[in-house]
Length: 287
Image (cartoon, rainbow, N blue to C red; front, side, top):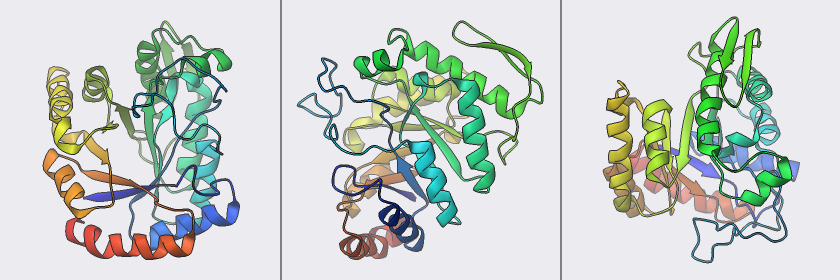
């Protein structure tokens, strides 16, 4: 089992350089495999869209710093050697794939091939309106952008002729370290997200819910992979949850390859003790 860490958004100075470097160095020192940065380019003061991961329907980190994840991860890359640099998740349809491919490949090369791209289709319609991207058919847009990214990363002369993005015979360099491109992990809580992960994802990050409740989603992912002629066991599964051995064992039993925890505090000294205990007990038992 691999273990990832998400900063304590809303409870930590995630835009403070000393805190960010301290957190990243601590995560690497304690044996975490990856660090995950969330994304929201804009959070409207009022919105009707329902946040799907809380009963209130409201996002718990509305009025806090949410740094740009790519800039944040590039900063982390310079202070670490082994830690994978993951987005959890990037709202892919909000990004121009030609520009995004260049940004991600640059960070990947400078970090020695450590980028992991977690993507989602988004849920906040008002955010899409602020950025100027249609909310409708965002799932189709996401799937097409994945294909465009992979062409830009793999092909010397990249091309894509689609409904949402078209380009032909263009060079995008540098390329990622891995000739296969940067791994793309599909996030989401719906059967559609599970099927998308099975069809086109290198990984699946089911968001929300207890491990034992995710069986149907993982079944959807595996069936979709088989239908697409892919090996479902090659789709890396990431789950998130509590810093608890029982919870992590349940995640492993559910089929998780990676378990991501949220930092419980922004105090680095307290965090060293609590994450150290987690590393010595849970990570040592399951790693």
